[in-house]
Image: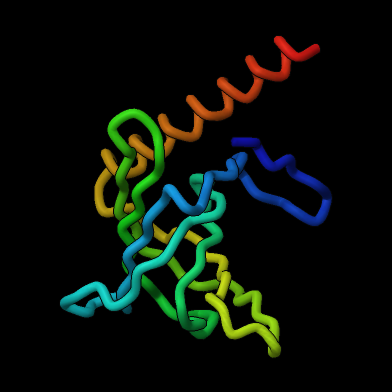
Length: 134
């Protein structure tokens, strides 16, 4: 898993990490809906938001409630609300739609705390691996 660095075009407040999508899970629903309508995978995540895929694109500006599960010992789960910021689609592609979501809030302070701990642990592991390789 690698940390994605910030560039002048990428003005995030928090670092984001890549995660192996095949080992992640995201459940999503329109804010206020009673059931989760979509299931997909997470590609990268930060405390600001995430990049994910679903089988169908969701219109930018749509508010979603999400439940995320990240790989590792015991799987890290979190719940949040956010807005879809962009959809990466290819007109010739009939596969899943990749989207960006900016977090507006977490279900609870513990959800944010769990995600922060996960990101910190992965970033530290990345730094340790880079130091050993040097």
